[in-house]
Each structure stands twice: as C-alpha cells, then as structure tokens.
Image (cartoon, rainbow, N blue to C red; front, side):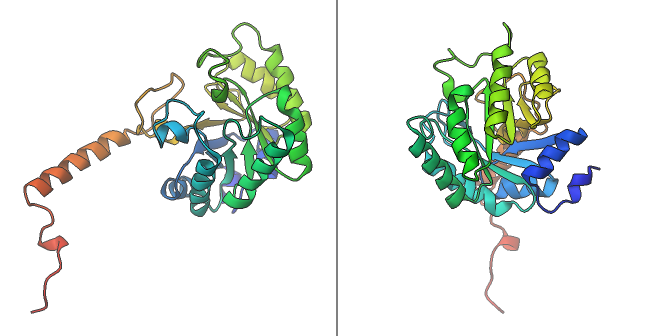
Length: 273
C-alpha cells in the first residue's frame, strides 16, 4: 500500500514528492459528483475535468466546442465528490489564446468559481508567457504536450508524436517547467520520448498513450470502465464492461415495465389496514 493513501488531501507538494520517491501517480478524468466520489473512495491521486467531456458527455466530434461554462459546471460537480484527490480543470480551446489579459482572467475565473486547484493548458513554448503570468499570480498550472486534441486540425488529426524525433518536445517540456508548471501531461507520444522528457524535467509527467516511463498515468473515465465505444484508442485498457451491465439492466427494466412486473408489492405503498 502506498504511504500516500492515508493522506487526507493531496497537494502539489505531494505530487512532486511522489516523483522524487518513485511513487507512481494515479489519475483519471471525472465529470460528475457520483463518479468523482467513487474515484476518491478508491484512492485516486488526481482527477482531471477534461475537455474530453465534449465527446463522452455531450457527444461532440472533438473537444473544440467545449465552453468555459461547461468546464466550470462539471468541475463544480466533481469538486463536491472529492475529499482527498487533487482537482484539475481543463481550459477549453480559445479561452487562453487571444490575449494575455483574457487568458489570465478566464483561468482565474475557473479557479474561483469551480473549486479546481489547478488548470491545464495545452501548448509548448508559445504559451510560456501565459503560464508565467498565472504562476506568478498564484495559479497552479499543468502543462500538456505531444498529441494535443485542441490542435487536432493543425496537427492533421490524432497522430502519434515523436516518431521522427522529439528534441522539440523536450525543449517545450523544459520551457514549461521553467515557466512554473507543477506537472506535464504527455499524450500520444512514443515511449522513448516520454522517458527522455521524464528524465529531463523535475516536475511529474503524466502519460496518456505515452508508455510506462512517465511518473503517472491518466485515462478517460468512460474508456477505463467500458462506457464509451464510439472509438477506443489503442492505449486504453478497459478494466470493466460497464456498458453491458447497464444495457442488460435497462433491458430487464423495460421488460418488467412492459409486462407489469414492476413495480410489484415490495416496491409499492399500501393503505394501512
């Protein structure tokens, strides 16, 4: 059992100590109170309210349509379900790209109104000024490099990064570290690149489709528990087939309603004799 399992509240300091001591960091996405409460009870270290909610919760084709209000709404719900886990909120596409003032204002709004303890921004050296301003203002920032879903159009699709060299990604990671991020998500990159980046930065790296050498791992809640099957990335391991359980139960419920088997006497109220 991890010595961190008994800690009442995970903080940035704990996450950094985990890296230093070789303790892997467990992370999953979450989007609502009930799922957050379950993950917290299980002992998850970090929960990310990802803009992946656009696909798994709202049925968008990608993450780009997700709004600031949607992130705040879901983060507030997740916050109510967490006691121990560290909470991070994704900053949606367009909320930190136009100018410095708007970027800082939007990030601070998420922190103040949602209860998140950090925000996550996609990008490398080009967003360093924003990160520096945020961290100087007391905002915890998580970086995100490699395959960046908000850049899906400019990247030409969801393509694995680092196959033809990864020196630029390492340079981005070092730049993010120097700007003050407390952690960096590495998504969709070859495992050798993730290993080199993890060695070259002193903040925790959290992998998703980036191999085993990262300091921690994160996956999407609905992927891990087999609830979402519109598409299943190669790097996803399903730990349960929840969709089948719910599907079978729903069919049984429908049959019992149609056949007047539910509600029965055990699930009805009777007049007093």
